[in-house]
Length: 336
Ligand code: F6P
Image 1: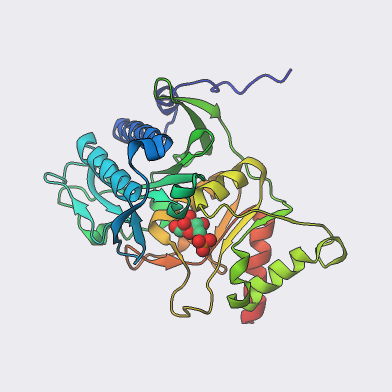
Image 2 (image 1 turned 90 degrees about the horizontal axis):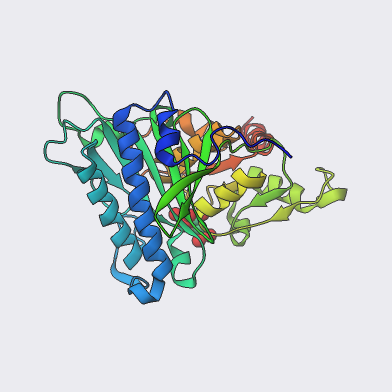
């Protein structure tokens, strides 16, 4: 029988204590976030019994209809950040502007989150998640919206909680990626996946195929080659999956490899993509890189993009490094 890696079975607090890159303030913040995500998980699981399904009757800054759970989980995370005492200011996919907490010049971190990713899955009982990204706050003065515009490589912690058949928390502090499973009986997080690694190679892609006719040529070429299967240029058959919640697709890729694409498309040519750089692409891109995969906008690593606005959108290709490199090569060839 294989010997389990030494940390397996640790509590989240026990794991954090072993992480050299996490100081006391970051550890406290991650624990607070995990506790709140545990509470969100309990609400998600109650569904109609908790009167949390359906629309909140408003639109968010992205022009999307907000679900009740979007609003509830957003408010819970804002409260969590403020009460933790570790956060100077928060930015949320659901809020137009950042919130700077009173006395926020004392918090060491800026927190960004997508409170409920994959909202269209909420009312149909399919997986959804929470994504978070922690950045350093300025010292000696109050934080401003401008302070959030830091590249993905400045992140101090990032990860997600996936509310699926099990609730899992996947976390990076810049030294690999660890996964924890929530015990709904007592709210405890146990380290169940000490070292998540993405294989370089895969035969599985995730993309919303209904947009095929709108894609740019390099993406069409990549998917056409995969669809051609064994007798095509790739010489192998591919499988396709699409959960329509990025956290769930990324979690599958962390578990068994694969590539995820949400590319630019010509319906809205001025919009770089659908997904948000600060709330989705940066945190998940860092998780994927830390697990040995790659994350790109088709031309450059996601984490090298210098953000220009809080709600900035971006084209995303991430997952098994060999496939991401192939998509990037197609883009470079098309531009040459
Ligand atoms: O936040 C955007 C999101 O819900 C992602 O989680 C998901 O990958 C994508 O949108 C699904 O988009 P579509 O509805 O176009 O398939």
